Length: 286
Image 1: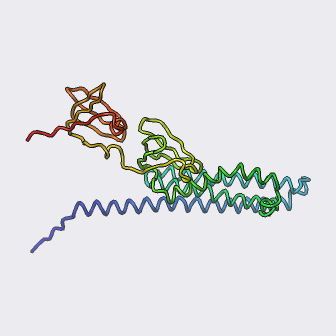
Image 2 (image 1 turned 30 degrees about the horizontal axis):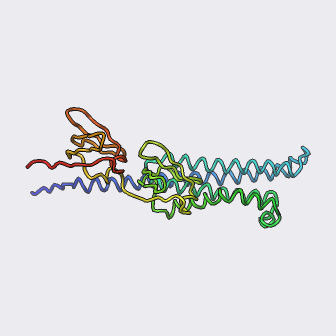
Image 3 (image 1 turned 120 degrees about the horizontal axis):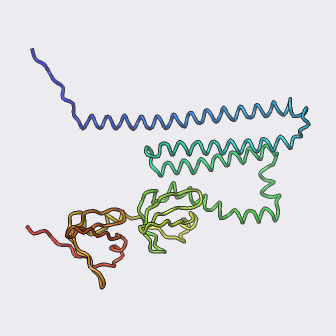
């Protein structure tokens, strides 16, 4: 009698587990958005029905005019829009470690745009205002408001383009040519792009300035990948004033750490790549 023992492959088991985990994450995120959509639809229907019943049966007895009801509906509509946007952002934050940052920012960005447009159309309907009346009936006031909003609209439009078409995404290392600054893209929102520089400061750039070419950004690899040495190498960094030598024990996105006679020296990568030092790399003796 022969007994066959099936040996499982650990690699295939790990791969199967990762696939199942990825599917579970996608399903949980999809279920969260589905639940939010259902609740939002039920809330909107319930509010609209309640307002209609209030206007027909209660408002006449209280002496309320239609204008007062319109004001109340306006406040409720804006509140619902705010609740929907806040709820979606909370869901994205809860799954921040499970979905890419660029995808999360895109969902948040276009949620604000779509919900704001729908809310604007609903408010126009509530106040019986035609869009063409705003565009052509405002005269000088419309022109002044349009000029004031042009910068805001330009930044919003540019933010959408950056999230969908711009090669540099959240988390990428970049080089700002205009100001000779290296850093990492931390955030792209409706109005601006936030960049964390290699010197530990935040650099905020309007989206329109980037898309119009006023601020030139070059995508590049992390600073640690651009260094002409790696961990374990023995190097010497020198200029007219100082000299550092030792074994590279650590390279991060911002700093290089040298060890020499039990003394650790931390040097900013930006100063190394900016040409402030002459770099000597010693080969190990065979």
